[in-house]
Image (cartoon, rainbow, N blue to C red):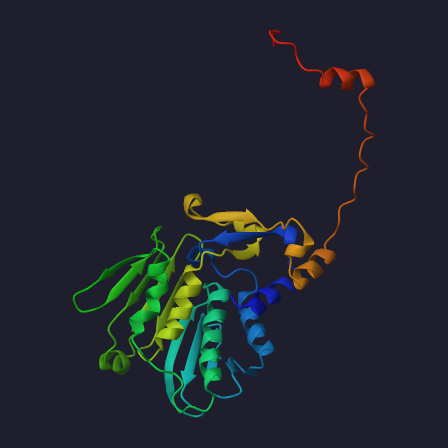
Length: 286
C-alpha cells in the first residue's frame, strides 16, 4: 500500500488508534469506511484533475472513471499519449479494498514517470506474468491445455484467471484477466483488458496477496465472517514512537481517560522480608 494512502487514512476524523483493528487476508477485508472518497482525495492530493465523474492525470495518459449511482465500479484506463485511444483498462467493483486500487494506479504512474517522453510507455508483455505474486504467496494454480491459468488462495475465497489474449478478446470486449473475491465480507470483481501491461496486473496481485494486514474501524468485528479464515487484531501500539505523525495527531485528539491514583503501597515489615529471604530448610513439607 502506498505510504501516503496510509497517512491519508490516519488523518481522518474517525481514525482513533484505540478504536481500529487490523484485518487479514486482504481478499476478505472489503472496502472500509469512506473508501470512494478516500480514493478520490488520494489522487487529487497527487495533482490529478477532477472533471465531473472522472479523474485525469495532467499528462492525459492516465485516468479514472469514478462510480456513479447506476455503475458501482471504478474504471482505470491508460493511453500511450494524450488524445490517443485507450490502450488498456481495469474495471473493478467498489467493494474492493481501496488500498489495492490505489497501489495499482500508483504503479501505472511509475510506468509513465520512468520515461515520460517515450511514444508507447505501456508495453503489453506476457499478461500471465502478472499473477506470479499469487504463486509466491502460496496460491494454488491450475493451467488448461490452451494456456489459461487459474490461481486460488488456500481458503478458496478468491480466484484469479488469466487467458491467452487474442484478437477476439479485444473485438468482443472480453477481459483477458479476471480477479474475483467472494469472501463472507466482500464480493468484488476486477477485469483487465488484453492490452494491460503485466507489470500493472502484477502490482494488483502483489497488493492483493500481501500478508500485511489492512486497518479498519473496530465495527469490522460486527460483520459476518468465517473466523478460521480471518485474523482480526486491535491496533494498539505500545508507544507513540510506533505511530506515524498523522496517527500521533489522531491519538492526541482522542479523549484520554482520567488516571486513577495508585493505591498506597504497603511495604512489608523487616521481619517479613527477612523470612522471605531465608532459604527453606530441606525436608520441610510444602
